[in-house]
Length: 82
Image (cartoon, rainbow, N blue to C red; front, side):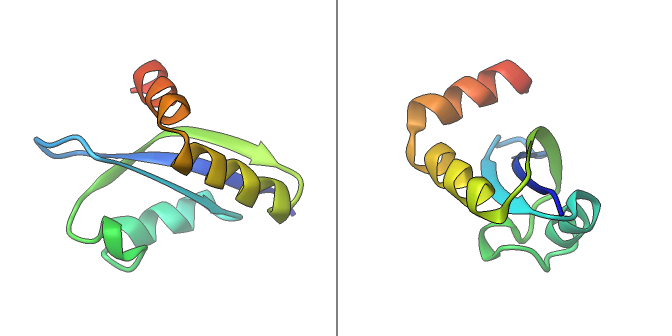
């Protein structure tokens, strides 16, 4: 089973990003956009601006953690893909 690390960008006037991981991108985006995803994402509409594929859950979790906690990397991805 493949896992994905993804970055979402809000579709509103105020651009906000969210980083997460999943094994089902389509379902996860649908959950975020219907208010059933992570608490932070509720009340906004989202689009995927970046995704990266991994063979194991452990690799995906490590990459997600790295992106979430490294502002430079997060901003680099945000700038390149949005």
